[in-house]
Image 1 (tube, helix red, strand yellow):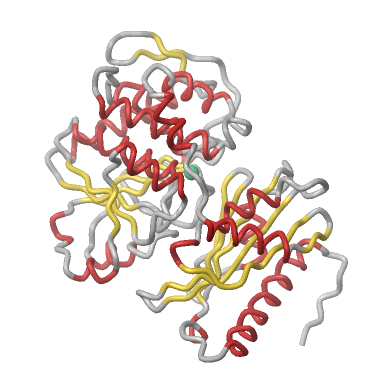
Image 2 (cartoon, rainbow, N blue to C red; image 1 turned 180 degrees about the horizontal axis):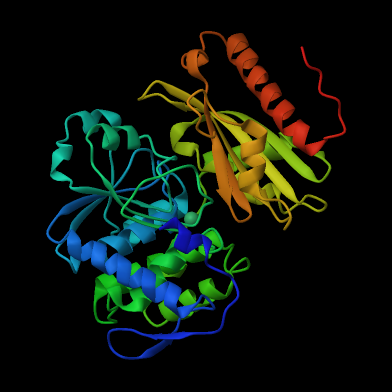
Length: 402
Ligand SMILES: [Mn+2]
């Protein structure tokens, strides 16, 4: 399956394909046979699983791309009598994501580790991963131990390791998973209808998803523009505007302020440690990175902090990278900077122009009984991260091996 993907070339001719209503559609520069082959294959997989119940697992901190892709898959799967639950293990914390879910009624549900223990997972005959390969969700171990097979993986992040599924469509050259789902819809797996309120809202969510992963289309490529053009027939511009108008919380503003104060700039990299954050404010980190990368003479911003989850007694370093440097591959950069954990899993990865990492702080997690201890702990991790990044940012600096 992955061989198909590897053989995809970015060139090729402008091709057209027919959707179920017989209208010729221009999909993208991707070879016609490649896309229509994927559509047929996915159609067959859905047919094979007719009548089943599936669980769509998205990242712990869902973003618009993941949320809209999951909703689209759910609507597509309904055509095959497959009912899907969209679940995530963390929190909706970005103001735009909360607005997206509230304003469109997007059916995603938060599952805590506790609620999972009381849930009968055996009702699910398959698991679907969208905008993810299962590495950014704490729900995956439960899916594995319940022996739910992974049926579908659709993602645009670089490959995060070996994954077994009936259907795999991983295309890092596409800027958003929402673009890929739109290609499936346009390819005939779901007939969008302007009079169907759900379709209009889903198209709006997809438009938001692909805009947000392409920096408002500025990093979009032909396939993303083609998808946006298709969605423009169905989406609700006023609704999208309402989602984009949502304002930042005071806490987020404070984290951005801290990142500005703490940033150090070296070789056009801007690094900022922001200290401790509550779990629900985690999405302030990528927003701070988005902001820092806009500074003159900065091509790459990396913002990180220690995120504290009181409910699950969990603490982890969370970081985001944003870059405008075309020759810097965020996925490679993060994998090289931080390496793998003891189980051989990378601490992070990325996609075009953006990346992220999560490093559990293990035994040192949890309660800080004095502010002095909290400060020491932060300084240790802050120092370690700067040291790891420094090796890539200033390769000429000698590393002292002990
Ligand atoms: Mn994405």
